[in-house]
Image 1 (spheres, helix red, strand yellow):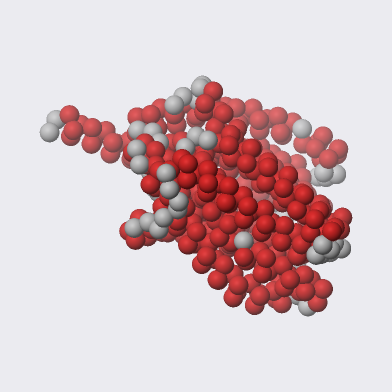
Image 2 (tube, rainbow, N blue to C red):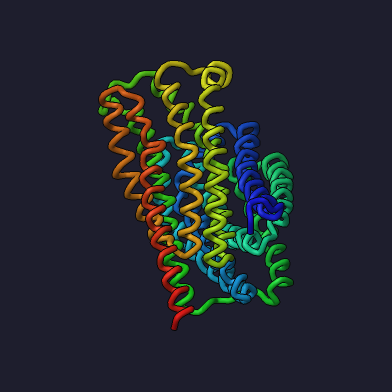
Length: 434
């Protein structure tokens, strides 16, 4: 499929909108808690950090399942694979329920840091959050399954309905039942349960049956791939937290308000700028999984040919607006702000290439290779530059973590892609001349 087709961009737009709607759901919770439950937003953010593994496993399994289902569409057995994927999602969600019910209450006192009111809120919310684990797993897997079968528009409509129901449910539990902080999670459980029932009914019409437990070998393959993807996502999250800690630590170098504020504001902007890359990466992994090798190669070339120059222009536009962004929006100035914007802008074309080549490798099942390389380069190359830059008070070195590990990753992925092309050419030659 060419990038010039409307179906290609419609599919990407649907996945991007679905990601945006998911973020909107989180914002709804934070805003409504802030208006009705004192201390609620802080407790909500604390809980999401505490249950990070739960959320990472959910996203990782959905990503792997989407690639597997897209490959099954090409092979003509998508219905059976969707039922297997949903069955394994339900089993994994049940395991998360049991694990979370044991582990999260034990971690709550440590996370609360001696704040009794915060501890009370967390303890009241945990049972409701943990009970929703199977529904969240099934929900996520179903959404990716619909994207993989090119029904992304359905996902956007479905998730918008979920957000609307979430607002109504929050009002009921927070205002009428006066359930406090835990009311938000009661509402989530109710909405996710109802939403899961609907999507199971929808998929039953599509696949001809309910979720089923897959063969052990198939389950093991999906579990291994999901574990690698979860490890990659978790490693990146932990690296981000450690980087923030280094910028705020007086043990590394003298902490200044200018430096810390500039970094915090820059990271907020970076999260906004990078979010479409995440959606694009997921979308490409799905689409490339359903294509033959020749079509994959053609699509990669097309994406790089048009995507990298477009990212260069976007980077130039971003860097030219650094003063406007700093003065009008983020209230930042100075070398730690301007260098961050230049580094962020420089990273955009590299990240476009990285997203395309990562998707190509994952579409062939290379989740372990991507995870190992991302983790090694992020921690082994990016983190030392952060430390050196802070010690020497050189923002150009400290901010190299934005582009240097990604540039190294692109170089390695390019080598892997060329090796794959050579192998495919060799197989084709053998097939033509047996």
